Length: 105
Image (cartoon, rainbow, N blue to C red; front, side):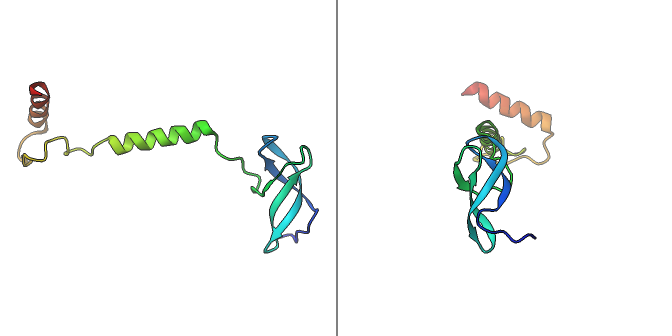
């Protein structure tokens, strides 16, 4: 592990330039860079260890996927709570019952 000093030049992902560029170390915490300054646009930001933040599109996809998973009921919970499940009933017959309930409503 190299010894970092204030003013040393390291590579990091600049959120303003949106790419990995040279940065000068502005502050250190426990001998590790905490804040850096981009040498291209002079923007100060936290040291990101050369990793770009996830795009807003990827975050939106993950959020929608979690909603779908939360809304999907596990198999066997499609029946109403007031009716006990018939364990000896074949799945096709149970599916017909559920479909018939939907038509009544």
